[in-house]
Length: 392
Image 1 (cartoon, rainbow, N blue to C red):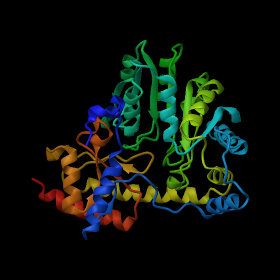
Image 2 (cartoon, helix red, strand yellow):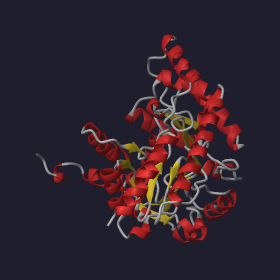
Image 3 (cartoon, helix red, strand yellow):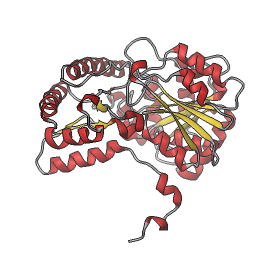
Image 4 (spheres, helix red, strand yellow):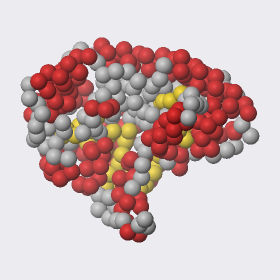
C-alpha cells in the first residue's frame, strides 16, 4: 500500500460529502437487518415527471446519442436563457449559458478559472461542503462567514463587509440555503451588491433550490442593477424536477467567463449527455404542475417535522423558508453533534447528518432532510424522541 505522500498534495485537501458516507453506513446496517429511516440524503423522493422521461426517450429514438457542443446543445442553451430571463427579470443570451452534468461542475470550474494560490473566497458556514473543498483544492484561502440561528441563518452583511480584502476574488452565496433552509431577502442582497461595487469580485450565486421556496418569490443578486456580469448563477434540474440521477445543471455568466468554463468542459467531460439535455427543454417548457405539487408536499412535511422537533425535550428548530431541510439545535444535550447523529443512526435507526458535516459553525445542530414520506417522518420523530430521552 502506498502512503499519502505518494499522491498529489492536492488530494490531501480534497473533501467529500458526508451525506454519501452516512448513506453507505445506513445501507450497511440495513443489510444486517436493521430498519433505517433515511433523513440524510438531499434528494427529492418523488419520481421524475412523466413528460420529462418521455422527452428523453423520444430524444434517444431521434438519435441524440452523440457528442454535443461542449457548452451545450444550442436549443437547450436557448431554453435556459429564456427561463432565466423570465425568472430573474434579466436579459440572458444563449452564449452566456453553459450546460453541465449537474451543478457541481459550475462551482468547481468557476474556482479553477478564477482562483490562484492565496486568493480569498468568502463562503457561508455551515454550507454545502464542496464549496470549501474546492477552495482548498484550487489553492485558495477559505474565508468562512458564519450563519447564525438568531439571524434565521442569514449572513450578517456588516460582517461580510469586514471580511472583504484586496485578495477577495469570489463570494459564494446560496439561497435558499443548504443545510439550514435560510433565504436571503432582497434587502440583504442590495447591501451585498453595494459591498462589491467597484471591486473586482465575482459572486457564485448557487440557486439550485430557487423553486423550492415557501413564502414570497426567489430573488437573485444577478437581478440587481450592475450585478449581472459580476454574478454566476448556478442552477439545475435535480431538485426542482426530481432529476438527481440525470446529472443536468447549468451556469449563467458573462460571455468571457463562459468561454473559460466551456474550455474546462472540453478538458474534463467533453459535454453533457445529449438526450438528457433534450429532456431539460421539456422540463423548463413543459407543464410545471408536478414541480409545484412537490413544493406543496414539502411545505406539508416541513410543518410536520418542525413541529415534531420542537416537541422533543432539548430540541429546538427554526422554520426553514426554502429547500427541504430542517436544521434543529441540539446544543442542550452537551455532546458533539456528530456523536448525536451517530447515536441516532445506531440506536434509533434514524439517519441524519451532523451540522459539522457542513462546517465548523454547524456544531450543535443536525440536518434532517424531509424528502421522505409523512409516515416515515412521524416515525423518525417518535424514534428520536425516545432515543434522545435516553442519551447520556
